[in-house]
Each structure stands twice: as structure tokens, then as C-alpha cells.
Image 1 (spheres, rainbow, N blue to C red):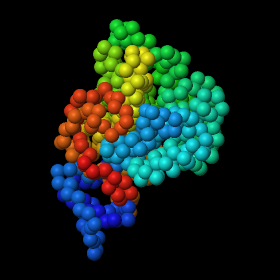
Image 2 (cartoon, helix red, strand yellow):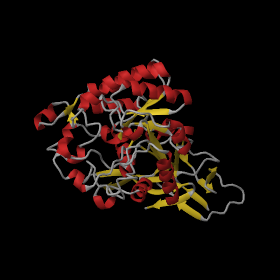
Image 3 (cartoon, rainbow, N blue to C red):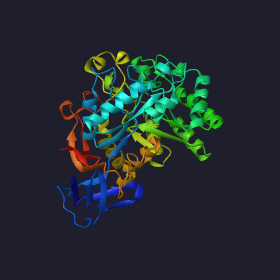
Image 4 (tube, rainbow, N blue to C red):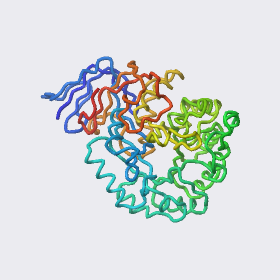
Amino acid sequence: MKIEINHGRLIDPKHGVDRPASLFIAAGKIAAIGDAPPGWHANRVIDAAGLIVCPGFIDACARLREPGFEYKATLESEMQAAIAGGVTSLACPPDTDPPLDEPGLVEMLKHRARSLSCTHVYPVGALTVGLKGETLTEMGELVDAGCIAFSQADAPLADNQVLWRAMQYAATFGYRVWLRPQDAFLARGGVAHDGEVAMRLGLATIPSASETIALDAIFALARTTGAQVHLARLSTHEGVDRIREAKRKGLPITCDVAINHLHLCDVDLGWFNPHCRLIPPLRGVRDREALRKGLADGTIDAICSDHTPVDDDGKQVPFAEAEPGATGLELLLPLTLKWAHEEKFALAAALCKLTVDPARVLGIDAGHIAVGAQADVCVFDPDAYWLVEPRALKSQGKNTPFLGLELPGKVRYTLVGGQVVHEA
């Protein structure tokens, strides 16, 4: 299949490309950029006039809900949501049922994903058996099965000796450890940020110190073991300051932020809006602004959707009982464009946070456009606004705080491996 994409604005952050150019795709690869290869005859021509042509997006945290939670979402529905959002590669955390702690489960997930011929799926293996925080998994076997890193997802890991041993083992073999910094004891029973809003609403709280204390412990263990650590879904201004200082001192760490936390804060809880029940909780205005600044200055490496589809029964309950999470795959691009516009951040630099930077976090060769590279491409209209409503979402989960809002950025085409898998 030969595909030609004409008249678009080609943006490739990795190679500093931002200019009008045609793109030529053959046999699943980028065949040429700018001028057609000799003897070129396209099977299909896509007119991208007025559109942006860029690498497919890479999401560092998207729950696909299989195995075990098919009543919330299926692999089919969430991969359709991914390509509708221009996401061509994603990492899925291990908090399935059962957790991704055995090679057979990982192999089954990857086989199912390949059979759908959509987004590339990169499983993150469980750090401990059953995510119970007690016994380390067989990391080598999980890597052989296809895991790119190891994590506890949102499951607590209160025993720092277990974490120390896990990081020692991972460092020995060059495995990545992904951790969400939160002290299990300080966060226990909490559902909201420790501030005026939670006090007014009478909600149990999670203090900012739960993040900073965990960060300090992780930094100490990372220095001791030399493990490659990625810090997932930062939420506090103190956390941003600590990571900035750690990077300044040369600690080889990376981190990301969930897209919801760039736009929302605890005030958006309103009167117990269950769609704003998230992990980590929405923090204060100062925290939100620090996350935005940290992303702009490079302290925070990447943006993730933290895609967590939840069924209606999980949200139509009192706030403290609501299941945490929000659907995000289809909102990743629009909310990133919204942040970039509000912060007067260049489009190419914003797309870097969705392409080459998360590719580096995942340790994969993706997120760029070059001759010979795999043709994972997104073509989108940055000026097209669309209404966020349940029927507009491909995801089985319709749970998002942005329902009823108009957002910029509509994906017109998504190509994975040189095949058009989404068209709108």
C-alpha cells in the first residue's frame, strides 16, 4: 500500500522539522519526505491542506481494562478510542485482574492487541506479585514476554525494603521502574487534596506531603541503586521543585503529568463532581500552575492521558465512594493544544511532549518521522472544535470532567504501520 499525504504542515519535533511538505509511505515505512521517490505511484492520496501532519502520539498511561474489567471497557473499544485520538503507541499499567505479573498474561494481551491491527501496546509489568507489595515478580521473564518497565500502578508499596530490592534487581539488568510517588500511610483513606475545598465538603484528604515524602525516599534509593526511575503523574508544586533540583544534580530520572491536572484543580470538584475523583487528587491552583510551568521548562518530560474508563455505576455514587479515573485518550491532543494556547507555547514544542519525549520514557524507537522509520502518523486539524459528549467518544468509558465543553483539535487520519486505521 502506497500512501501520499500532500499539502500538510509537517511537524517532526525530534528532527526540528516544521514546514509544508508531502509525505510518502510505502510498505509500512516512510519512503520519502518532500519529493516523491523515483517511479512513485500512490494507491491513495490524502489532501492535508490546512492540517498538521506529525508523528503518532505516545501515551505513557492508558488502561485498556483487559483482562478482568471488560464490563468497564474492552480492548476493542479502547484501541478505537486511541486511534481516534491519534495515539499510535501506548503503555498500559499492570493493574488488571489478574495483574500483569505472569508472562502468559502479558503475551495474551500483546497477541490480542496485535490481532486488532491498531495501536501498538506496550505492557508495564507488575513490580510485585499480585501488586501486593511483598514478593518481586520474575522481571526477566516478563521482559521476554514484552514488558517495557515495572510498576505498582496505584497499588501501595509501603515497604521500602521491597522497593530497594526491586530497584537493585532492575538496575542490575537495566530494567526501568515506574513509580507514582505517594506515601501509602499518609494517603490512606483520602479522596481529595488537603485544602479548603475538602474541608468545606467534608472529604477525607491526601496531603501534598504524601508525594514529597515518597519522592525523597525514591531519590535516595535511586542514588543508592542506580536504577532508571520514571515518576508517574506528578501532582504538587513541591514535587515539581524537588524533581527540578534532582535533575539539576544529575539524577537520571524522568516524570510525567496527567493531562487533567494541567487544567483542573480542587475547586473544580464543585459540589462533589464524581468525574473529578482522580488519582492523584486534583490539587490546588498553585500546584496546577507549577505543573504547567514544569512542563514548559522541561522539568516534566511528558504528558499522559491517564486514561481510566469507568462504567456509570462506578461514578453515579457519592464522591467519596466513586471509582477514581477519567477517560482521556481522545482528549489528549485537544487538552494539550488548549494548554499550549493558554501558555503561548509553540505547537512543535507542545507536540514534543506527546511524541519524542514519551518515546524516550518508554524506551522505544517511535515518535518521529524519518525516511525508513515506521509510518505511525497523525493528521489533525488544530482549528476544528468539537463538543465533548458521550456519543462523540469511542471509549466505552464516558467519564470525563470535560463533558459539555468544546475543545480544539480534531484528528482526521491516523496511520499505524503505514495503514489508515482511523478517518474522520
